[in-house]
Image (tube, rainbow, N blue to C red; front, side, top):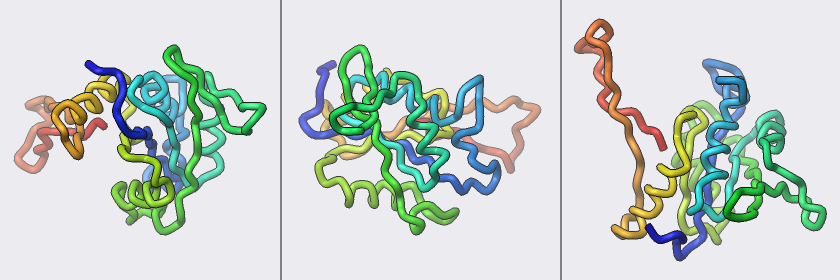
Length: 179
């Protein structure tokens, strides 16, 4: 696997504050840390990303991102610097508009808003907070496959094995999006 892509690759975590099912679910603890931290951990360990962004509309989510282990504020720029084994880069927060943070806003519209504000970004690797088991090696593998196979997009799925006790004709879900 080659180690770098020819264009700026941004890791983007969509984390709006207005969850209707579980209020502020993205900062709710799961396994001893906020849900957001799982996605940040994978992104900060991925070697193919040039920047990591949290797209949010909520101050508590922004504060949670800035408390992620390894984040330090740069004395020169005021940006939050994440130290990884392979590089330094900056965790940044993109404050998305209300139009792209409501319950009917799509992930695609949120990514397009981010891209419109950041023309330097050529590739976005979007990870949902609700995919806490995504791993850095999967992110890197997906980005390398995009480059090597000259793909314009890629996503990962995981086969969901449903117990025969839970399976029914009304409950078929063969794949779950993981990245």
